[in-house]
Length: 442
Length: 155
Ligand SMILES: Cc1cc2nc3c(=O)[nH]c(=O)nc-3n(C[C@H](O)[C@H](O)[C@H](O)COP(=O)(O)O)c2cc1C
Ligand code: SF4
Ligand code: FES
Image 1: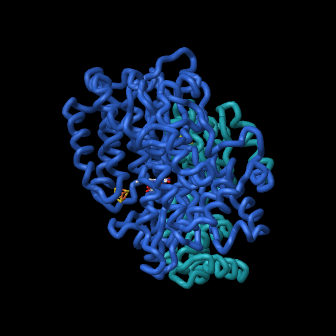
Image 2: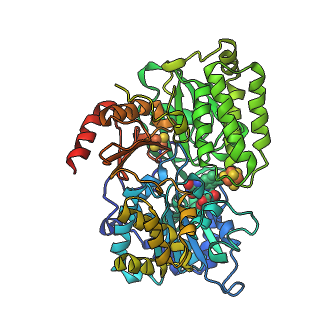
Image 3: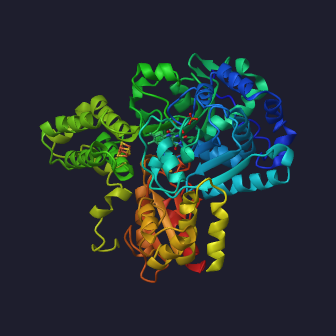
């Protein structure tokens, strides 16, 4: 299947689309005019016809999500559109580039969505660290300030996060946006019914928004001709790790992973072998190097028990130790757990501890089973998907590379040691092991 | 003082509920005070119309909000997987050497705090280092001395 196809990022090679005039020169904001000439329901139908599914990770059909929002006559509270620009999943950096390079397409998408769900008030929750994209969006909105006919009566507020991965989860995001600690809420009620300030709220990802103008422009049916069944259209995929040409590539859904890594990504540097691939950000089940003859789409990856997630493809070469990978990923989730559920809060810490014992050669064979048992006791027992995905991801390293884990036990240590680039990497959550009193390195 | 207070009132008007102004107000207070000292939290609480305890409870959840003093400059090296795969740890260690401090510490003159950080959302441009919340990409250990020099000259 197809390979590169620019829709969301179209025009960025030729023009500086951060400028309103440049964006308008290629027909920018035309889709907004077109959408506003349609009824909100007609826009929703068009998006349903496009078969667009959310690009934030859960892959929920966008048009359907919008159709759950009560109409203003059913619920007189203000309706809110909240855009999830909190991108913090290890391996994903697509929303960063979308906001930085096509801010107006993104804003146009927000205005189209606001029209569809009859919202006058849009909040873009952008991760606190993203100073660059924030500044780009701020000046794009300033440019729009002088164009009331485009802005209409909709206000767009940029709300900056303050450093917490969990705030990407939509209900934690709403808590955070309400000025609280970012801890997920129980669902139901779903945000569509009771979201921000207990009012009907749609939460959508940045890329989902930026895909709307092209859908309205070409028509939903036409967009649905791209890609493969259940995964229509394009996807901006972040490729990183051990590839020659890391970066974001917009591809038609269904493009093979081999093409992503060896074609677009340029293959593995220094003549090394591909050992493993994280297909959709750190929360997804890992693939072995020989499992990449698979389409990058929902159904094909589901057959391998994994997912596109947030479309962060990370390639690891044959020097990498999978126990070390487990430690680093587990430390991430341990650090980012919001602490609300015991299995997630404590379990991720136990996972890290067992993995550390495996790496140092202190673990017994039975601790491998203990590790899987801990994962099993997290899985399905948490409020939000964070704990669960941590457990599933790490368990997949054990399942797919079991011999390597056993070798750590049998050899009483790591067979890779410091030849693996993941050796002894200092994670924020491991600062307590990094004694401040020891001597400064020479 | 009053300008901060007024700024926070202005921010509140953007939201359906005043409480949504908490993170922006904490960010501003931190910019003014360097960190969220007792005084900063009090100021923030007064402007929001809430208690310092509420402000502190919220602030303690977030990695970018500092309840303890930090350096005038913040150097954050991403050590998550994609950056680690291409040598982030070596970059972090080079910063330790050049700054003469360990990760997690602040230089004795109070100028620079160094710390590792989780994925910064720039994995394809590894190693990503955030200097005062502006990203440097493709950072190699040998780039570190010049960055540190810049920080020291930057005053
Ligand atoms: C731990 C966790 C982190 C998440 N982080 C993000 C994120 O950074 N950006 C995002 O758009 N969605 C993220 N999501 C998914 C959101 O909860 C939600 O499904 C999404 O924003 C909906 O938008 P979409 O339908 O357009 O994809 C995360 C989910 C979880 C469980
Ligand atoms: S699963 Fe983890 S992150 Fe999610 S609500 Fe529970 S403790 Fe918080
Ligand atoms: S892993 Fe370093 S920016 Fe994502």
